[in-house]
Amino acid sequence: MTGTAISRARRSRRLLLVVVAGLLAVALVVDPLARQALAGGRSIDLEVLQLRLAYNTGVAFSMGDHVPSPVLLTVTGLITAAIAVYAWRTAPASSWLTVVGLAALFAGAAANVVDRTLDGRVTDYLHTGWFPTFNLADTFLTCGVALLLVSLFVDARTEAKESAP
Image 1: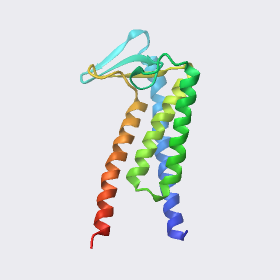
Image 2 (image 1 turned 90 degrees about the vertical axis):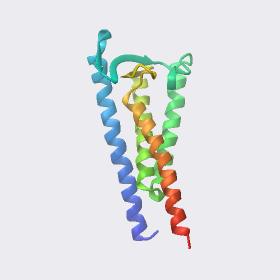
Image 3 (image 1 turned 180 degrees about the vertical axis):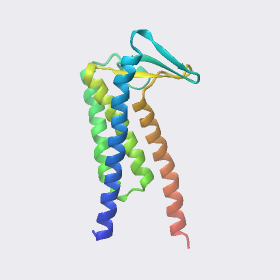
């Protein structure tokens, strides 16, 4: 590997770590604040969005809520670890958009795993009225997937332009 390639790999991995650390910290700070502020059935109406406390013992859309918590924790923990390994290994050869998408995906998954570790359930508090209640970590997961999809199109267009005669 050349000096330039090593420098690029370090920058990509540094970007990955910084984005993961920042998003994970935000999610892990907001969750307990939401539990405290919304305890006792309190809710806050923000017009399009309501803050209201709910708990999810399953995974997305409460699927698997009948599965024992240790099993869900193990499976989601393994999936989260796999995302982390994949992100770390592919970051040096990935665009910044892909790295940020993978970082958001990992941060969201990791925040939900940490939350589930506390009491076997994930704290949800963002409610739209037309969609199931979710949390900030879920938005990181969704945004991460969206960024990865966008990066696929952007990277494909860039490669097509570079290989055109």
